Image (tube, rainbow, N blue to C red; front, side, top):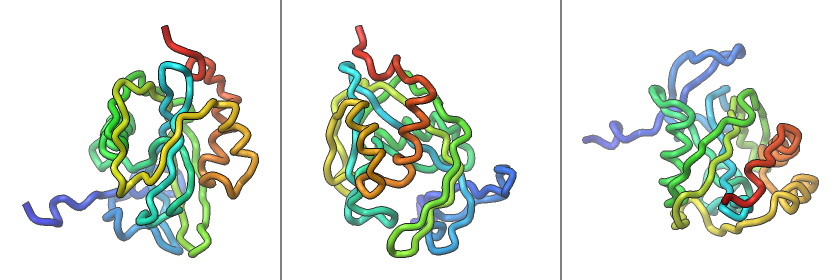
Length: 185
């Protein structure tokens, strides 16, 4: 297979959030990023703690920033749920179960200090860790399991975590995620 055959594509969206085509992921994030489909995932362990990750310094967008467990882009013929499972395993070496979309209509736009823009329709998922963690260092430079209360506190300090997490965390709290933050039997 050629390198082009392995190129990751993102789904481009119109202002009504309908698919209008695809573009190579490597070409999408810049100062005039088109609206595209993404996802965010918050992974919980059996004790009800949530996984936070610090993005690798080699990441194009928000390098070195603390954020939720995993973010990514569904491929053109991939459901968001399948994309969550795929990227969580690729980035974190982690198998998840009970993958549930909690915020199906989340959309945001944020501009990084270097001018790179995120412009995404980004359904937000919660999932339960079903294996040990083995993060890919090209994706994650640090990680920590924390209480949801600590993460809620971090969301009140915008420079402490990614802009999408700062917006998502209060919405997740309002959506009622009690089944995720309590210990499992």
